[in-house]
Length: 639
Image (tube, rainbow, N blue to C red):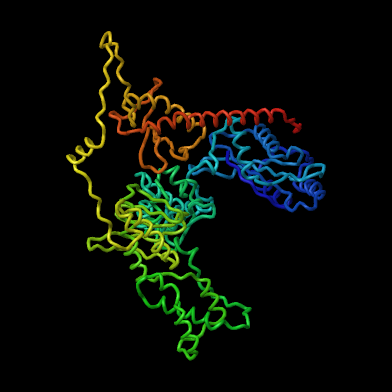
């Protein structure tokens, strides 16, 4: 069943359209009497006048059954009666009419019905709310379709592709008819909505990543624009020719989230965002952070002129930005002597800043120019690359920034995904090439150069070089150490010779118990398999209980990778469990076991983590039972 909803305030107009159309057939009404449209309109208006504050008292519902399942008049009347009950119009006036003037694309007759309802109740006590009536009517049609055994038509929110509008379909039919009659030189123009959907579906068949899909669409002539959305995600729009549409207008499968869930497009923000920024070449990464001068002039300005020291400071800042020089900590602010000289020399060739321009200059952040940016990259990038290799992890997360390698490119960006600071590639000439210039504030660049880079260098120093950090003198010479022969002579001289104890006689050598060896630090293969069979079922049950793909703790995290259960350290340095259930109460692990699990970590998970999971699941179960018990005690006063 396909239905539509409209509202209005003219009963006479809607009744004349419904009843006076050729082929219209009156089926029945509720709480109305008479035989003419004028009588019914007067009764509708008389009841609606009881609620004069109701602006739109007319509710017009039109619905059409499938063409292969026609409805008789009696069935249509019962359908309309139950539909009004579900929409809250059981105490309202309504009228039902059948129209027979529509046909399908194949030329088959398809009847549809018009239901005119007065939203004001018959006693005038209230007006039926129209809030969310379109969605409520779709839900009512779906329930009645099952009750009357009609063909199920999916709702708009259930379909991945949005269908073209009725006007677009009529235009295509008219142009094709004119082309067949010789009145048009070519066939109908394609619908942009359908054309974009077909092109995106064609590329999504190969299970691409999001940046690869954007690149193929750009090569195919489809302009793509991606921007941060207000809900924290990403919004995507497409443009073909002069027509631009949002991804949600194409359907649920063409947003960034829909492409991942319904088209199999892979997207990881920490790796894909910098590459997307390079593909799109727009202001995605800097439009929120660099203030742009406004064309409007301020109507109010303060009469007081700026202080000389402030104006000279702004002029010095402009001179420093215009002249390219190596980045240094002292270059961020003019010296005191330069300020005094500028204040003593008022006859300067540079014009003074007005109050409005001075305030604009104060609000605009100080950005590195392109040459300073390249010098900064050549100083910072080698240290970041060496630090990544020293740590041996794919990504390093800090308090404010993070670094990782994307192919051959080194990426530096802020922790909150707000912007990218650097994308650089190491060339053979021992220099770093930047494919794009990113606007970086001078304060952030100096913080990385003065704070982050020295901290990384101290971390990467060998242990014997830590003594040289406090003093500037030469490193101390290593102490003299006794060789093996000298050490033995010293032991024989200093240490007394111990007497060997007399062994006690034993009855049989077999009865002498052997000393128990200390357990090794790493589980062997048999102990590892027993530990996995004990721990893995609890982890799998806890994952299902939490209803998520990953659960992170203080030291470890666990998640499902297909059929395999994975338990690893939180920093991703090593994996503890990689196995899948065999269905016989055991867990299958790779053979031979590629992981070495410390006995300390195994006991910690078995003695601490598993009891915590059991306690959490029992508490959640008790809370759910209490909520269910409290709901059962509530009284139902709907009747």
